[in-house]
Image 1 (cartoon, rainbow, N blue to C red):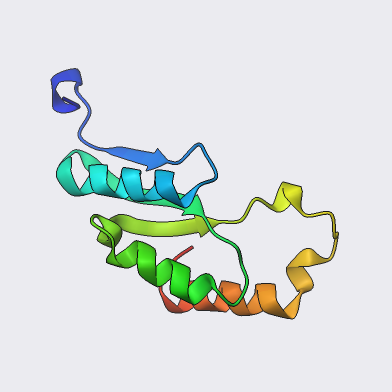
Image 2 (tube, rainbow, N blue to C red):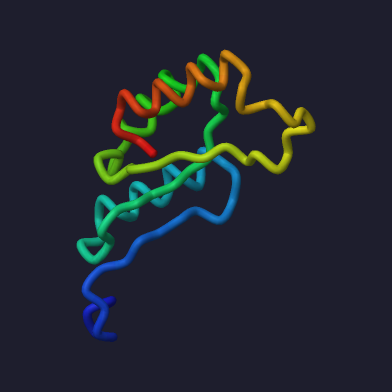
Length: 99
């Protein structure tokens, strides 16, 4: 369908803040050849980050996952990014080549 409109490929960034939406978009990417990748889904940057990112990568289309995000604007704590658990989570994503 994309090629019919002169589009070679598309990048999708999820709108919602649910793992379910990420899984749905990854499954779509697994089927749609015109989707380049760059799926960005929500994740909590805490010690569960490694397990959750592994689950997403193992899902259909998970090889297209290139980045995850945390909704920083909902954090009431200003120095939240300096938290040890958050730093650990960021390192876990970097170890998986996820932005």
